[in-house]
Image 1 (cartoon, rainbow, N blue to C red):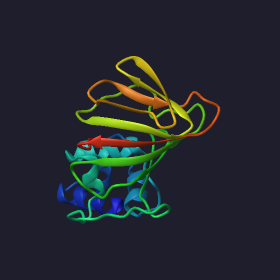
Image 2 (tube, rainbow, N blue to C red):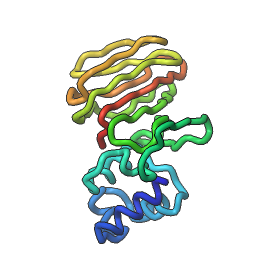
Image 3 (cartoon, rainbow, N blue to C red):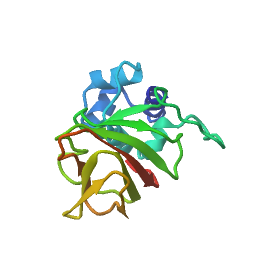
Length: 178
């Protein structure tokens, strides 16, 4: 579904692969692979594409109107990766404009981004395996299984795993934002 949306939005805007690649700061080869479904783009790349299209993240995953009831099954969920392809996310929600829920995994030493970043949303993260650190507005919050943090995403933020074991978390963002 992502590849179809990227192709559709690119064509609607009359852009070539090269034009979209230049505008998003990625290679035309990568975009070609994305549109053919041969690669899973990083979350950073998806955010860049959404910004170029003037759309939110959910638009790139939209399949028309979301169903009234959506069941998400392991192994069948759309997958996203972090900026460097390290962090793995599974998308739990259908393409909507009001809520995005992701299941994130971080290995020891990984982070969701090199530097904190911000966007106009409300965000909530809950640790479901291991422990992780949330850096929000320059303050570090150590979180263990069952703990959550909710904040205004306009504050610069990121998550990282300083422990020696893998961490998993659920991340909810409303409204979704590139």
